[in-house]
Image (cartoon, rainbow, N blue to C red):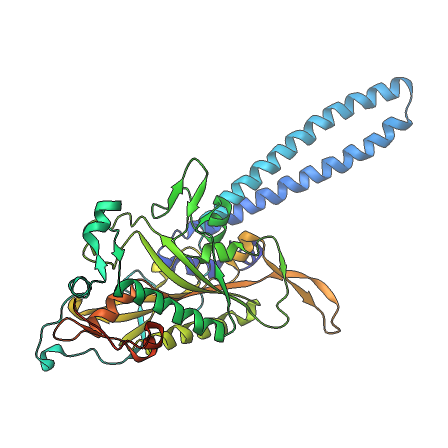
Length: 428
């Protein structure tokens, strides 16, 4: 949720943000108008309540005909108070509904435009030239079947399309990858967490996902619970309605969870293999920081993602995602995309988002503020950030980039200790 006070005082920067996202600028003026009506309704209600309280004292002191006349006035005033309260409540509901529709204010410098308007921040490493090596690269599914790592056919038989089994080398590779990610996170000061994958609607909504209209989300209607697409959701809700102590620095969590996405609207896209699937596993970083430290923390999360990519020895690029391709909560997002040889292009492996105070405002997560003498002087909204450290999709790039001519796969050196020292995943 955006800061209404800031929006009403600085509407043009919110109009600019909406314009960059390709979103409705008029929403800003509708919020200002609704807020004005809400304030006017509250003032009217509070004025009438004060008048009502004053009448109560007059009635108590009056006698006879004077008291009867005052009682009639009190009855009329009570009806007016009730009407004013209803008006204030209606204005608040209207305001809440509008506030749920406006996305986060983007950070200055974020590229304007849609999905194809990203800016490449940097490119690291060089894709392998398989023609020089004298063989045509196989795609990740063919390799996965050769080494006994992926079974899409039985995944579809058991659960339907876009489901799969990771087995043998595939299962061990994913566990190794996620464990390496968690070890790195712990060394960086993150608290490891195994998170719930089912959450309440208020947690999902509070994180910035629209439970009413987001076709990506799986819902269990009988229980009114939602399957998460990332442990970010549970970790964002972990401190809901709490006042945090950030005096000693950021509070960081690393969530290990299964994730679920319906992949609505992706018919015909990435139907082969495990690039776009309904269920996958992931280690997600999540940080709570003071607002003024959010951009520095964002840079740190990106650096930790790049550290992981270096460990698995993949060529990649970092992009600054355009405003129109940001989610509701993100004020800025960087993606790390690894080169996939058989597709001849970069594909997203990680993303890290700075959500500033958007999620924390919705979930009522605050920190205590102190004056120069160290005395408490109230609370303020914190900033939240998230970043992927490893996920199932990484297997796609690892298998393709590190494949050998016979279909076997060379294990990146950093992963070998997590696979019992194994250097090659052989063809079976």
